[in-house]
Each structure stands twice: as structure tokens, then as C-alpha cells.
Length: 118
Image (cartoon, rainbow, N blue to C red; front, side, top):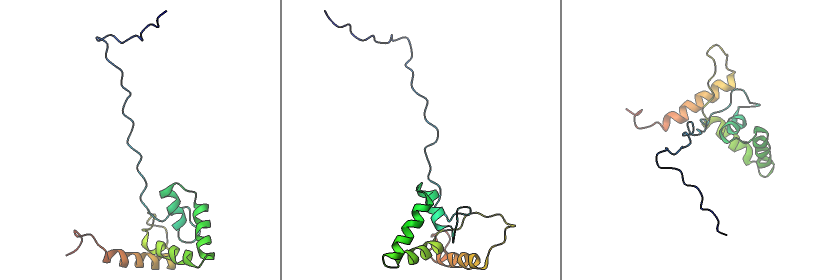
């Protein structure tokens, strides 16, 4: 008894190839969240960017704070360095948010790209 060889497709029929997948997954831009925010939207923005729940980011910052105080410093640095989320023009900004946006503009303006420099 011999095993029959697998059938080969005839040469006159085209082979079927799967369609190319849609656009590859693109990670969202790292920004502070405009919707998932408790203080500055840093944890919500990190959650949108990384796919990790914002509660876990918050627990991590609390853990860093309790372990030596670095959580507060890192959070404040990210609050200033991360660009804010797009907000509607008619939405009023709090005084603190205006201050953070001015600080972000001052810091990011000093690290401008070569095309932005005079």
C-alpha cells in the first residue's frame, strides 16, 4: 500500500493569494489626554499611547511617590513635556492649564527643529 501523493493544482488555474491587510497599526501620538484626566491627563495620555489601562499608570506613579518621591517629579515633568490634547476653541482653560501650556511652549520652543530656527 502506498500513500497517494497530494494533489497539485493545475498550472492553468491562478493561485489564490490573500488580500493585503489594511493599513498597519499606527500608534497614536503621545499627548496628554483631554478626556481621561484626573489631574493633568498624563496617565490617560500614556494609557492611550501604550494600551495599558490608565489606572495602572496611576498606581505606578503612586508607587514611585511612596518609594522615594520620584513619582511626583516624573509626573510633573511629563505634564510639562507632553503636548496637550486637542481641545475645542470655545472650551475655557483653567489657569493652571494655561500655565502648563506656556511652560510647554517655552520648553519645546527651545528644542525646536532646524527648520524652525532662524
